Amino acid sequence: MVSLCVSETSTINGQVAIMGFDFDYMLSLMPILMKYLGTTLSMAVWGLGFALIIAITLALVRVYKLPVLNQLSQLYISFFRGTPLLVQLFLLYYGLPQVFPIFIGLDAFSAAVIGLSLHFAAYMAESIRAAIIGVDRCQREASLAIGMTEMQAMRRIILPQATRIALPSLMNYFIDMIKSTSLAFTLGVAEIMAKAQMEASSSFKFFEAFLAVAFIYWGLVLVLTQVQNWAEAKLNKAYVR
Image (cartoon, rainbow, N blue to C red; front, side, top):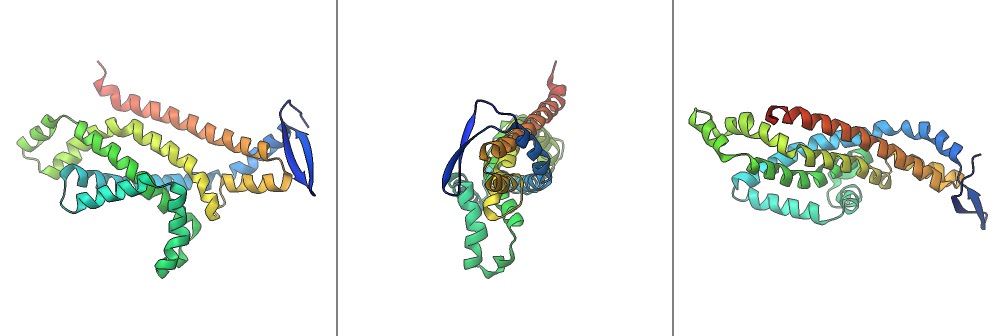
C-alpha cells in the first residue's frame, strides 16, 4: 500500500477508522471502471444524435417563427432549461409509467438516453438558432436569386456555414452530456459511476474510487477537446488568410 498525506474516514461495524490514501487500489480500480466506459459513451453518443435532430428542428421552427409551433418550442426550451436534469430523468423513468402505462416497459438505459436528448436539445437549439441567424443574410438572398428553394438554401448554404459557428458550443454541450451520464446510475444503469459506487461501498475507499472516476472523465474531456480543436481548425481553414 502506498500511503500519502491524504486521509479518509470510514465506518466499519459502528467504529470509525482512519486510513491513508491507497494509490495502488485506485490504479487497480481503473481497468474495472474502464469496462463500463462503453455504456457511458453509448449513452452520450445516442443522446447527442437524438438531441441534434430535435435541436435542429426546434431551431428552424424558431428561425421561421412558425405559428403555434414557435410557441410550443419556446415552452419546451423554457421547461428543459429551467428544471434540473435529475428531476427530468426521474419524471421520465419513475413518473411517466404511473400516468401513461405504455412507458412501464421503458428500461433505465433508454430513459437515460431520452432524458439526456431532451435536456440538451433545449440548449443546442438556441446555439443552432443563433448560428443560423449569424450567417450573413446575403448568403440566403444570393441562393434564392440563383433559383434555389428556401429549403435548398438552408440545407446547402446556410446550415454548413452555421455548423462552423455552432461547433464550439455544441462540442461543449457534448462534453457536458458525457459528464451528465453519471446521473444515470440513479436510475440503475450500470455505468462508470454506478460501478465506482459499488466498489467504494464494498471497500470503504470512497476517495480512491471517486478520484478514479474523476480521472477517467477528465481523460475523456481532454481527448474530446483535442477533437474539437482539430474540427475547428478544419472548418476554419477556408476562412484563414
